[in-house]
Length: 119
Image (tube, one colour):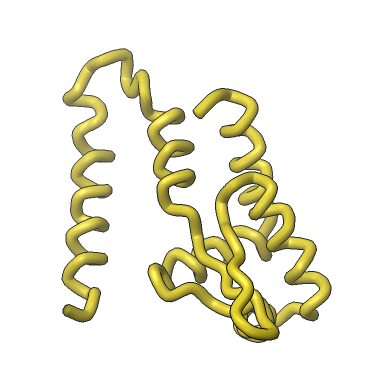
């Protein structure tokens, strides 16, 4: 991950509908959500959702896969992880104690996600 890619990803998320869309896709991983359903759930016209999905896709945060007559979208969690790691790479100047609360929050989040997944 480099600075230019990170800025593109953050810029794509710096809009309410795109941020809501990305968060919704994360919540529906790994199944994904069809574009029309995303538009309905977010409450925007389909053509508006298409434009937002194009922006998120260009930033590498989502991918679409054609299934029959619709496109199923998924969040690219590896790409988002790379953005987060780029931001945190030099966390707190190497002072692990300063970063520990963030690590604890992320660990807690990860454990909650894993416990909510069906087996």
